[in-house]
Image (cartoon, rainbow, N blue to C red; front, side):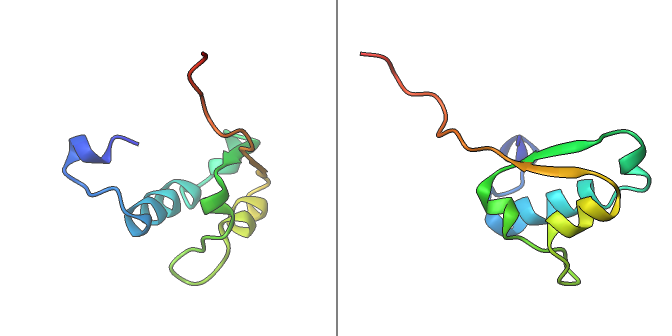
Length: 75
């Protein structure tokens, strides 16, 4: 995310708030069918305590997980 450019600290709370804003957008399930989530996101919940995985599923969106560790420098 580009939160630092927007003057927002890159904290877990701010990332959670951003994800909640996205995942609860009205009619999101009409436009996307799946979401790749980081491990952190799998265990996060909305402000009312509902796990994000359930928030997505209720909109017909299939949650998935990003399992690679990112890029590593080649020697």
